[in-house]
Image (cartoon, rainbow over all chains, first blue to last red; front, side, top):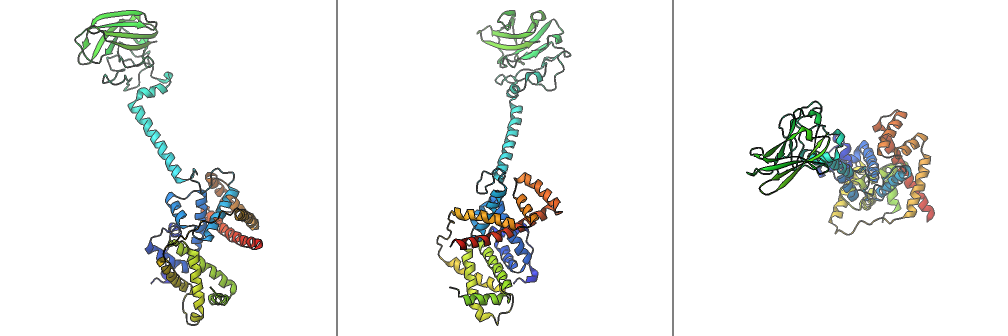
Length: 288
Length: 182
């Protein structure tokens, strides 16, 4: 038997749990006994009752508390009146504040909304990271051209503008920031036929130090056939062509040397035709 | 049905002072209701009143011989009443309160009256405590707390105490107004 002098202390959470009918049975018996002898506990419980009614009306109860509140709290006329008074107080003095009816779920102060927004933000964050990682080509569409790296050309036959696999879209890969175009010497570039005109590789003419620009054209498969390559201007005029080109087996590339005098600022296409079956691929290039 | 004499005897047994007895009676009733509600009882007021009625009827027999805390006697009787309740077949016990717009209107009138009766600083606390949305309220609370030189947690406690007083005042006001209507 519990004595008056051996009354346990109860936290504020325990008081709320008691009022919501959520306190475990073994603890509840001690609480009930204390309620008769511990004046302070009774005071706290009375205030907690008021606070619960307020919190319910404000919509700040946690989902589990709210469920317990609806189920177990309004079981006496006094408590129902408490909720009514809380509602009246809230409506009277919080009229200027948006969305405060405790009976509606549409309160953005409700924890469920907070979780929903937090989850949504996390999903958007992860989706952005995934998109930027997996689909940089898509991301590039949204990045203004003026902030793109000026020159993707490199002084070595480095793959800078093609997919690792022929079936993948052409990707402008840069392992390190490109140097300013006027400083980087450009002799060789690599083009992929899956790259669109909008995403054409930009080459600064001033950076081409040799008499020709070597263009390595990626092909889907290496064939024994020879190739014909044509440099076509934006207006469709064939400016330069070369026949009898062969593909480099391990790299799946056809090298096409374009004399510098045929290049000027503007958009160009390079048409590559396989001699054996006439199959064509088009590559885009922008000079400036 | 409880006789008036039994009820008067109960109050006298609780405390010789009628005022003190009335206060103690209300406290005991509140505790019984809170306990029964916490046990999941759907009609705690009914069982609390049944408990009080039974105690009142027995006071004549026990008032001379009973030793100990009188409140505890209520707890024992309440346990019996609750036990019987649990054995009862479950009927539909919960009835939704009628949507009484007149009562709601009266509640608002009583709220205004009771707020008017508060001391100026208490009125200010209660008005501002309920005044704004959550974020603004935090700032307001800081301001009010600073103004009255109390901590934020004390402010909440004070506001809840004022709110509890308001509750009592509003209930009394409603009783009076309902009596006037009858």
